[in-house]
Length: 151
Image (cartoon, rainbow, N blue to C red; front, side):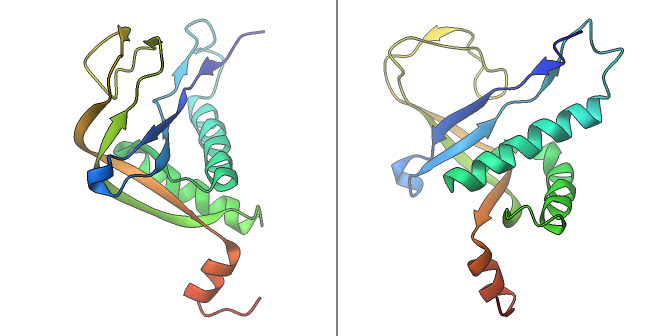
């Protein structure tokens, strides 16, 4: 048996100057080296993304991820909504600044958020805007109103 890989789902924020608000950031997924020969990387990524979409809907927070994943995000969301999973929303590609807030310790390395590596973060840092795919969850009622469908 192998650990298939890992993914980091972080709670971040948009800067107050940009409207503020919490969001979920999904780091790029990584497969375990020993398992990579035995694991379907597409299924692995889809399973992680489906979990992240579910969390986004449960927490009613937007989900941000690398813009290269926008197509997979749209395809998976269409599959989830057709299966009546109760998770609805829209996908867009945007450039937003993100805010890293201090966490009283060492922030684990992120090759996608900053060029720093395992640093002690003592103050809020605002990252420059970068193109990201964004899933914005919506309630079934909001989707029905937008599509003029009766519930």
